[in-house]
Length: 173
Image 1 (tube, rainbow, N blue to C red):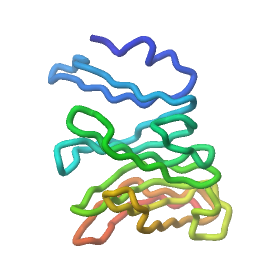
Image 2 (cartoon, rainbow, N blue to C red):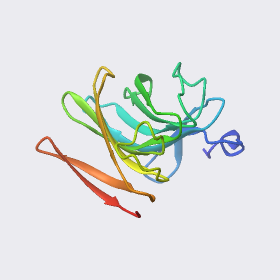
Image 3 (cartoon, one colour):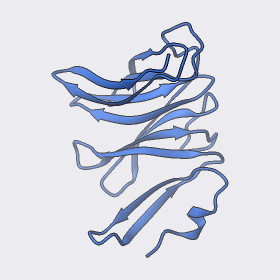
Image 4 (cartoon, rainbow, N blue to C red):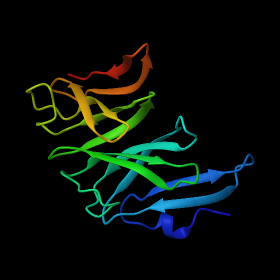
């Protein structure tokens, strides 16, 4: 089957998860829609056989999550049948997104970026700063760290190594 035409005709982003078979044919697809953009950036298997998805939400009515700013960083934990088990929305008055998640035994670590002044650890007003956020598996915020200068400063990837985070970043400040 092909990707549904209704998925290709929206005026804003719709979060879509598509399963393909080994030959590249669409097996099934699930869409996640709000009144504004839902964007998925990353998917990985969870430790329990489900899936972890990151992205952003600008919607005001998506899965009972209350958007704080223009767009907030989004995390969805799915079971193996893609039913939502856990969800996190993190943001300030401007824009945030999560671009990757790493799961440990007790925590989720999120990589992303922010343009909200109240979330940034620096006092400058750059266009975009890198962001790392830690939550426990019950959805409780633990800590965040951001960095950047006056330009567009983002981390592209990160790994967890012996309880330490190693990140690769691009700095334009």
